[in-house]
Amino acid sequence: MSLEKYAIDPIKIESGIVQIKKRTQRLDIYMICTGTIFLASMVALFLQQDFVYGFFGLTIELKQLHIPVSADGNLANLHAQPDYFMNLLSWFGWFILKLFVSFIGSFFIIRFIKRFQFFARRFKSFILKFVAWLIAFILLWSVLTYIQYERKDKDLQAYAKVIAYDQDLQQSELAQYLKTTTLDSTVQAYLLAQVALLHQPVDKDAAIPYILDLINSEKNNSEFFQYGFKPEQLWTMQYQTYGKALTPMAETVEKQVLQANRISKLVQYFIIVIGIFSVGLTILIFLLSWNLKKRIGRIEKNLF
Image (tube, rainbow, N blue to C red; front, side):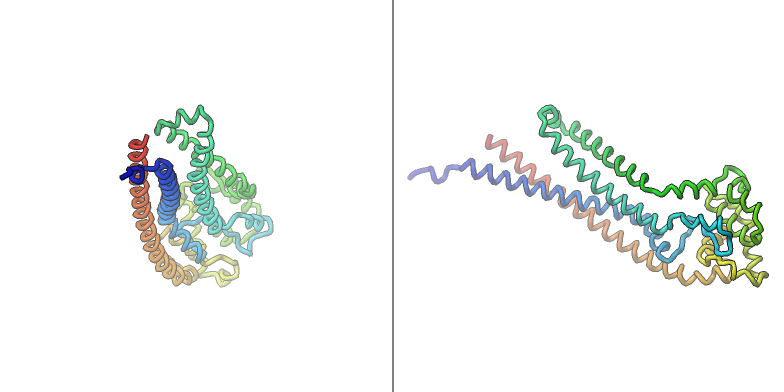
């Protein structure tokens, strides 16, 4: 009986190895995607409360200056400042984009430069290959970060300059300007309290006297509701300094706060489930890919 039919066909084996390598490449791509989802979910877990509160027009800490309609025209120009909620969405969108592009793009860069013999020889070392991948990742991340912040409006710098001060709130350009106006003292207190809470670090000592002025004015001034103050802003200012709403206007926001807290908890649980699922899937795909690569190594060793 001829033994030829039992002979191993090297061409078929090589074809099979190519197919297995394609599978490992697909698995590596899936692993990158699930790993990226896991990283994004971890970031979202820390940001979700800000997102949910921002959707309701709320923040636990003051994030931007609100200029009431009762302020003069010069101050109204500061309305050009970016909306905090949209800023947060933009930042998170850029984070996901940078993560995907830098992570996946660095693999394409390594694959491209491996075509050059100089790099192909050196990339046989896993450590050198990883260092090159890391450098490519950092370069792509840096380029995208530059583009992200280059796109920001110059009005933001002008806005930050107006409310900035070192030690004394009265040093800020806004405080100096208010001294030259005839604005109602309640409106000035509303603006200056915000400036103190927007200061880094938060200047609660400077903010509290102005917040107390606002509380007294709401109780005693019949024209208080005509100034155009935002209830959400008043709630944030009082919550940030006293941990609760102290006036009727701020208390009107409590229903929104309760809604935001309930949704925030649901979103938190959902993100945790997504995170656990994605990390489990990433580990499973990694083990499958690693097993296939070991199998390819054994076949190639026995064949060649």
